[in-house]
Amino acid sequence: MRGLIFLTADNSLKLKNDLQDPKPNSEEVVVRVSHCGVCGTDLHIMQGHFPVAVETQLVLGHEFTGWLQEANADSKKNQDGNFGTPVFVNPNGRCGYCIGCQEGRVHFCGYRAMGAASVGVGRDGGWAEFVAVPANQVHRMPKDLPMSTGILVEPISCVLHGYDRLFTAGAAKQLDPTDSVLILGAGIIGLLWACLLHQRGYRTIQISDISPERRQVVTNMKLDGMSPKQPTELLSNTYQLIVDCTGVPKALESAYKSLSSGGILCVFGCAPEGVKLNLPYYDLVNREITVVFCRVNQFASDRAIDLTYQLHRQGYLDFNRLGIQVYPLDQHQKAFETLGKRQAPKVAFQLG
Ligand SMILES: [Zn+2]
Ligand SMILES: [Zn+2]
Image (cartoon, rainbow, N blue to C red; front, side):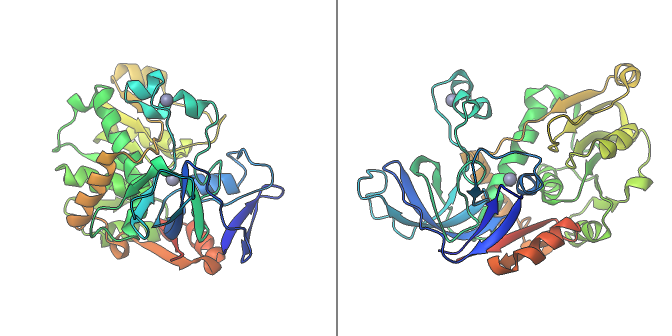
């Protein structure tokens, strides 16, 4: 089969036409991939920031949709004629028994902590024609949700978890849709935060990004009450909520002064281990700033599927307006170049 492999020896990528077809075990099914996104996590892995637990090579890609291809002959998991069913795959497994799972905080699942492999991160993922995945991580796509749009379920699941964190951390009590919000970073995660907040009634949403192309995407989205900003033109003491989607401490530290007193700082971006965040102790206390940290939760819950479907129906997820560029696998270099130069908020591969 065709696929793009990541070689751990030199952190390089190679397009191969003769990769071995996956062989599912009795707990797995094979998915023929339709679309697969490229995520910030993939870039971190390719740059060697997040080590992967495989020895030589790995097919990356954890945001994908496809069609059920086959079950293992021994499998009881897919015996009811589901061949060809459009599905998307939740990249992460859970045990269902540990305290994290039982309390509904599946991102703290001890089974994952013990190294259970995430699809596309610790075991082969969706940047190939076929992939074997645990059968209980496969979900049927809602009817009339396009296969391309389905790749957003996973990032939307992350954003929904961040939004939930504002409530579980008690911070949301301080928020009202009339408040001004600043989102740092107009990559796809920042844009999806904007979509969710807009859907929930917020109408003063600004998104800052250093890239003019990405600021143009914010304008193109044509959401009333949402506008792009240059990081240099932020006013101080203005926003009740700042959501960092950059993972870049400098961006967060310099935007911090734009937070109004009693405001909420939601730290949502991912930074590699060892990166430090430098916030002013005295000011945090004096102005009673609430800081909410979010571990990005890649569990594509039923609520995330539902939310993706709602946002799609409400017109938020149009790829042209969001500036998402879709490439065939053999143009992967161009795709990574576009993303690397921040010329698009997101790129994805179409395989099927
Ligand atoms: Zn991701
Ligand atoms: Zn668990």
